[in-house]
View 1 (cartoon, rainbow, N blue to C red):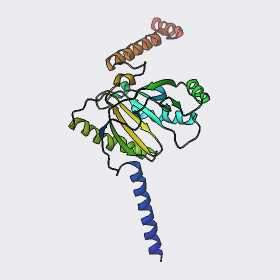
View 2: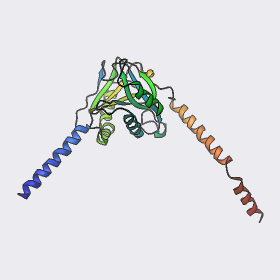
View 3: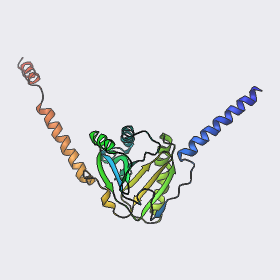
View 4: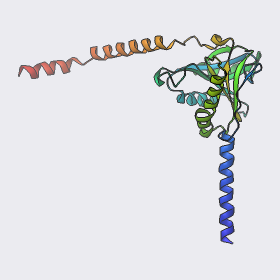
Amino acid sequence: MIEYVVIFVALAIIYWVWQVISKSGFLSKIEPEVTESPSNLSKPLTVYYKYNIGAYSGSVNVINEARALLPKSENVTTFGIYYDNPDVVAPHLLQSAIGVVFGADGKDLYNEEVAETLVENGFEKMVLPKVSRAVQAIQPSSGGILSILALVNRSYGIVKEYISANRLEVKYAVEFYSSSEISIEFPLDNVDDFLVPDYLPTDELESKLARKKFDSDEEDSESEPEGEEEEDDGAASE
């Protein structure tokens, strides 16, 4: 009898693990395509975002922050615009815009009070344009870390192979996250309208950060306490 219970429990655990992995996107069929009606970008979207410099892994913090500022709902859609290829650009130079979809096709999903709360917490408003063509791939999502791992380690590889095989030229990846799926959409028109005002070409950003570091080092050296210098001079005279 005990053996049957153990077998039943083991099978239940295996089934549960399979369900979790399946819903995360690891076992799903990913089918990239060029579409004239992408799931999200087929209409103009009003979004609130934060501009970020640094590794894309940090985007989840902004997404969680945005979700916490919204009324609790299963229908929240967050997004990320990823401007650089992490296989080419160093992590500290990666640029992105992360936030929440506030409205679609001119219709707001939340009231003005929510908009004010987002702005008070550092989010900025932007309207993403409607596009007529995009590369799109949809992956199921459980909303957890497994889905992100599936996205980064599996789905993007399939999408990149499709883009390369079809000799498509894409610039920026726009990801949309809902409670049940992640949609990867590479716009093929109106591409530069996805740039936020703070965006800089990588070489300009690198120069800006280098100057900032130099200025910071200069300030640190100038602010060295005089007492320490006098003490050093006294020790030298002895």
